Image 1 (cartoon, rainbow, N blue to C red):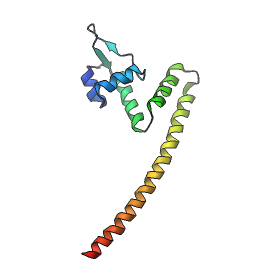
Image 2: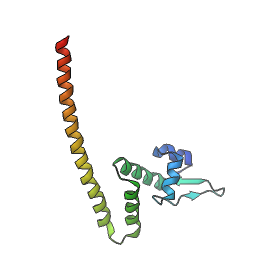
Image 3: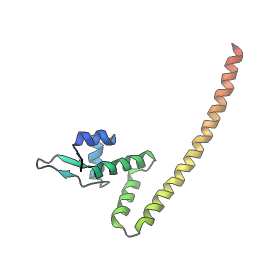
Image 4: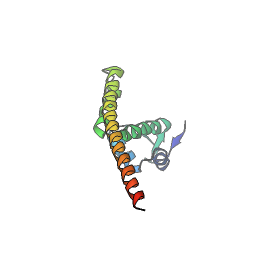
Amino acid sequence: MTTYAPAEASEETGLSLDTLRYYERLGLFGPVERTSTGQRVYSEWDVAWVRLLVCLRNAGLGIADLQRFMGRMRDHTDGPAGLVELLEDHRTRLRGEVTKLNLALDVLDDKITYYGNQAAQKK
């Protein structure tokens, strides 16, 4: 199994070392193995999990959402249904935001066309 030094894990995930440690401290992944000198050694699983966290953060999940997600992953009391519900709720919110952004883009496109035509007529 491939392992990563902290700097390599940071490069692989796109997160700073401070953010990696912060996510670990919050319990979003880990615990991370350590060498005999105490240096963190990230496994392929750690790096893959952090990539998922980055994806979920990019999708707009906050730290509290990620903690709930991890809590549901760990406790297994409601099985995958709780995870599905959390992710579906967020997907619904994201789709609403995408709709708003698409409307805003349409308005901007209309204004660009309108003002572009105005500028072209003045030449």
